[in-house]
Amino acid sequence: MRPRHTLVALTAAAATAAATLLTALPANAATASYVALGDSYSSGLGAGNYGNSGSCDRSAGAYPQLWANANGPSSFTFAACSGATTSDLLSSQLSALGSGTTLVSFTIGGNDVGFSSVMETCVIWGTSSCVSAVNSAESQAQSTLPAAFDNVLNSIKAKAPNARIVFLDYPDFYDLNSSSGCIGLSGTSRAKIDEGINLLDSLVQQAAARHGAVFGDVRGSFSGHEICDSSSWLNSVDWGNFGDSYHPTAAGQASGYYPVFASKA
Image (cartoon, rainbow, N blue to C red; front, side, top):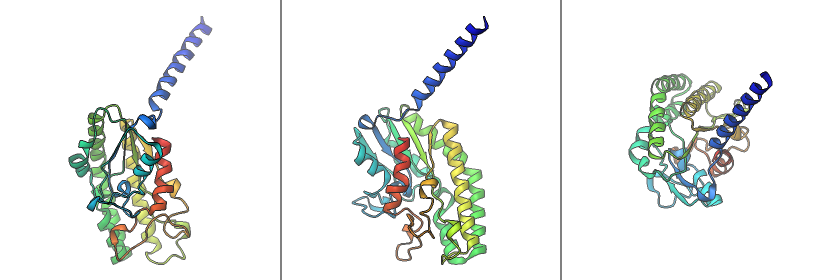
């Protein structure tokens, strides 16, 4: 009887694996109803060409628009907005979703823990203030973001129960292997900033796993194209328009974010 039991077990295992594979298959692009939510890393701040999107800074070069242009989904709603927090996403962007939505993407979390003020502190006030600011943001992230991410993902699933959800993270800002000859922040500040980003990204990854969402990790695609690299895909400090600082350029959206999202959509 043992061989027969083994065959039954293998058949059941194969069926389970097949079912898992089918549920994980990407949405058909041509028939997708796609909604892009999130903050400035999804709206495309720093990439230029914002059209009439006002303070939301939705760029024609942002990864959601690039994906829509390339794949021609049946519908596309670009709701991401620069400066958005998890609360803003829930209050101002969630209405874009519906039972017919089949694909959702977003980045969120940085503004919840004071991304802009932390970077201003690091740029203006020096190493000790930078380290302190990042430590404070890390503590806040660990204590508040897991629940905030749970709320966002539960709300998206409630509004769009049939959607494939892609939760993307943030790139490291600095290539620490190339920073010794790079002017600006100290090596200690740069390492601390990257540490904070990686903590935030780990919380994104954990939240995606808890809710069966797809995690899109962009750190690998930006590797070798961070600030201090010769071909950076991130805006360094721009005193004329500080908001663009530390955000992906058009190349960062096209070659950093877009291929990661396209592989997960």
